[in-house]
Image (tube, rainbow, N blue to C red; front, side):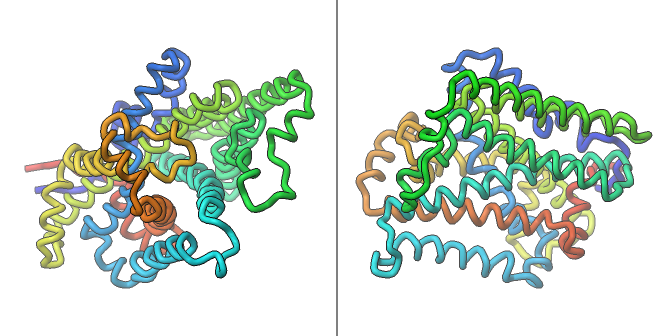
Length: 397
C-alpha cells in the first residue's frame, strides 16, 4: 500500500536530492570558478540539450499527465486550454500578418518578441526563487508574517531579476543592447551610454553591485538565523541566490548566463519530477484514474522519477535543434553540434518562421502554465498542488 507522509523534514526530499536540484546554485557557482571557459561551455551545451526544453514542457506535462489536475483543467479550461491557444495564435498572427497591419518588418517583430520574452523571463526566474524559499518556509513549519514574506519576495525579485538586469547593463551585454535593431530609434543603446563613462567608474559600479548583493544576503540570512524555526535548506537557498547575484557582477556575462540558466532549469525539472511521482502514487493509492487509459499510461511512467525525467529529457534532446532557431545569434545555437544537417535544412526552409513562432509561443505558454499550477492564492489550485509539492510517498506493507 502507498501512503503519503506529512512533512517531517526541512528538506523537500533529502539533503542529497535538494543539493543536486534545488540548491544547484551553490555548486554551479563553484563550478564556474573552477572550470575553464571551454569545459564549462561543454557542460552548458549538455545542459541545454537535456534540460532546456525539458523544463519548458515540464509544467504542461504535469498538468495534462497527472490525474490530480483533471478536474481543475475541466473547471478552468480557459487558463489551461483556451489561453495557451490564444497565446499561440497571437504570436503567429504578430509574426505573419502583413506589414500593412503591423508596421514592423519580420526581423523587428522577432526582436520585439525577444524583448518581451526577456523581461518575462527575468520575472519568471525571480518568482521561481521566491517559490523555493516559500517551500522551505512551509517545510520548516514557519508561520509567515506579512513582513517576512515581503522581505523574502523583495530579495528574490531584486537578486533574481533587478540586480541581474543592472549587471548585464554594466557589462554591456543586456538584451537592451540590441535596441538599435528595434523600431525605437529615439532610444540610445546601453553601449552608447556606457561609452561615455570612465572604465574605472564602471568597475566601481560592478564592485558596488557585488557589495550590495552581499549585504542584502547577509541581512536576510541574519533574519532567518534569528528565528526559532530557522531552516538550513532555506538559508542555503538564500546563500545560493546571493552567490548567483554576486556572480552576475563578477563573472563574464556568458559564464554567468550559463550558470543562471542551468540553475533555473535544474530547479524546475527537479520540482516537476518530484510532483509527478507524488501525483502518480497519490492517484494509485486513491484508485483515482478517472477511467482513462491516458492517465493509467502516464501513472506507470510517473511512478518512477527517473522515467519521468527520461521522457522529458528525450523530448528536449530531439526538439532542441528545432526550437533554438529563434536565437538572435548563430553562435548561440548548439543544434549543429549534434544535428548539423537538420539545422542547415531548417535555416533554408520556409518552416523557419513557423519554428520561430513555436519557440516564442511555447515560451510564453510555459510562463502561463507555471503561473496556473503554482498560483497558491487560488484555492482549487492550492488544494491540488500543495499535496504533490510538500508530501513524500513511501511504500509500506
